[in-house]
Image (cartoon, rainbow, N blue to C red; front, side, top):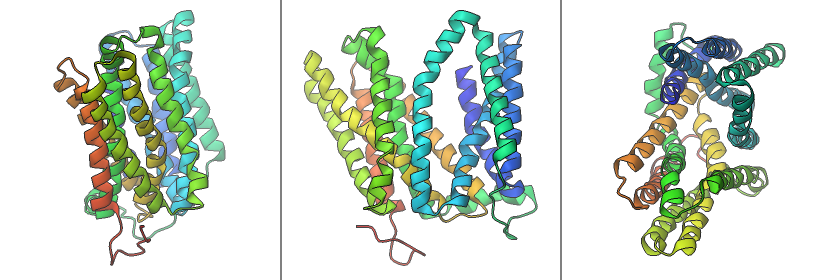
Length: 360
């Protein structure tokens, strides 16, 4: 059911953004949460595997509303520099959740069975629905240029995809995160089978990566008092590129050195993970800045491109598997290089760009 969930998560993002532009942020957010809650409850009552798989798709479509509409709300309420700080705070929550969710889910599964997991998330979805209904006010600015025809709203994707800097920032973030998905796909083989890390300690690999990502995301606020978002993102991309290249160099030179080889892989990998905590809020805030009434559609495309690149990276690691650690490390290095090039070739402001900030 996990593959079906990710398909729904990707496609759902393309739905909620245009709806949020046409009908406002609040209504589609409530509709998405309602779909998520009802689908989760239906999953708990599923009587066959086929039904569970289908319901997981709708559950994912509902859950994707938050990924899209939250970005649009931040764009509505904050200028680019303030948006980067706010998204860094959100990264703290998004980074902690994947660490503790499996632990909590494991306990629920052990004590109450798999159906209880879906009842638990259904209750959480209902709580979010009530909270949003009571506290979230409409944030979409009034704009007479928003098309009344939904087909025209969806057609706005074309204008977004022809915006050079938006595509650059989306590819910067998508490429950088593709490296993380390459790590997720390849690390069980690399750390457990190749380096012989005991399975009970394997979780620390992701714990360390999540910790560095969370910690670095909280540096956005202090660093943005010294650098502009564009300047900080440019420096971060240099670290991303360097960490990726060092990772593949370590794989070529030190993979046969046991513990020392493991450390040689882990250190640049942690630096790469740390850059993700900076890339996400910075790239998102800069990508969304040119779009006001179309912030929902822009957020949809931003998320969808990221998921597509992550899927390609994951597939690459599996396709090129040859019993060595090069498929994983090489994919991460390629992702870091693409992120660097996307920023420096497409995203960086050029002379003549409207409101282009200086990039030093």
